[in-house]
Length: 303
Image 1 (cartoon, rainbow, N blue to C red):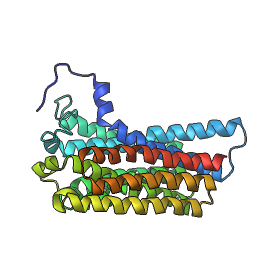
Image 2: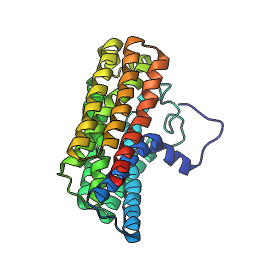
Image 3: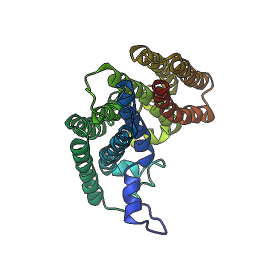
Image 4: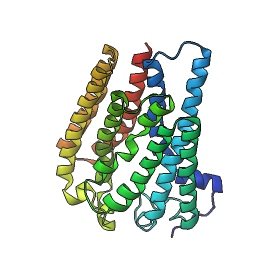
């Protein structure tokens, strides 16, 4: 167990348990789901509609952060021994001794339940169901079953983190059996592997040390780089399919092609020149890419 000279406040510990950087990035896509539904269905006509959308967005942000962050907290509880052995994770609250494993587990479960209730009560039943099923999938299917057993853990487990647009769509009153929210789901689903595989390339020795079968550990770094390029290419195509199926304008199609093309370009550079610098460029750009592509959808529909 690691120790710090000064114990942070309990609120700060709770905040760190929620994995705010990852969770908030995904909640941006959930808010976009809210806005996209309203714009596509032309429900924004006056000030009251704007207030309603802001309220829906707030419900998604709070409920989604609690359910997603709660699931992440349970993940930290389950992997606390592994986290203690990796430089990437040994500064988390449980390894640092800032909170007991039992306390963290109860906090995580409480967040999932509270977030689900908020999405259900102030959003829709469908939003609550999708959120709680995503949390269960992340904890039981990804964390407990897939992650320690298969190199395809990120591919399959990524489904849990791809649901925020569905939740946003449902909170806004949309039917989650429609095509558009699922195409947004697909974009995040295809974005997840290259994003996390870039990270696993940077930390491959740590994953090997703790025995986690991440793709570069099992298949090798060259295979992983080739897979990153393949997924980046399919991701680019998926964004264009969304534009076509959603009836989006030329502005979106051009920007999506540029954003996705540049991501593919960075991945190809990494494939040819496998340096830590190029790997980090792919990882960092992937974060910006996801926020930008969803923001572009909103802007295109609005204008």
